[in-house]
Amino acid sequence: MIFAANFKSNHSRASFKEYAGILGDFWSEFDKKDDEIIIFPPFSAFCGCALKDKKISLGAQNFYPANNGAFTGEICADMLSEFGINSVLVGHSERRALGEDDEFVRAKFEFAKAKLWRVVLCVGEDDIVHMNGNTCEFLESQLEGIDLAYEKLIIAYEPIWAIGTGKSAKPEIIAEILEFLSLKTKAPLLYGGSVNASNIAMITQIPHCAGVLVGSASWQVQSFIDLIKASKA
Ligand code: 13P
Image (cartoon, helix red, strand yellow):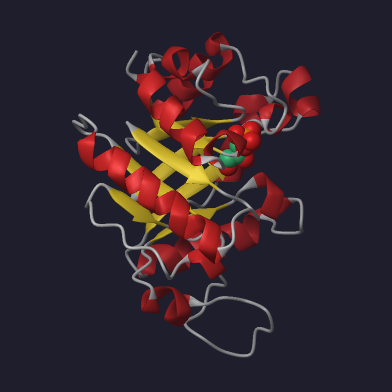
């Protein structure tokens, strides 16, 4: 299972150092088989924590698709490589809400692919698309122009209407969408949207589910540890 944690704009460098120490200790003792943790902290928290285990790594929540240049306020590849970052989130609905359209998402994907980075591509519909029953067509449009055979691609299905609500999508809905996505790609498929210790066991049993992308339930280290443990219960 892939346990991906999106910290969004939470954690300082100091608090993440403490978090990483506790999580690292837990993870070194954990009976992991093909399990893996990827944490997406804020950029400012990249340095200052030592993650010794190969199956726990850091990724970037965002980047500008260039090595460097005149892009005020952006973080480019040169800055990420200084921290050894080679996993990135692309297409998260919170970035799309800030103006990243499908074309820019594609440009970021292409750039990341050229760098051979691992890309966690987020797709997901809002409540209107969901209620109108148009989710598959919508996801298809978000995937247009994306190389679904890229070997370092991971796709996270994150319905916007389930993010940050405390209520995940129902298992039958997740199952239907993951089945749909599995017919298009061999990439590992994650679910994200109010995943927590109470629903993780149910979610990870869904066919084609290779893991989860967790927001709020990952921000406290004990909550994230409880979630990982509960996935095996
Ligand atoms: P929550 O787990 O808080 O719903 O957030 C999900 C998410 O946006 C992960 O990228």
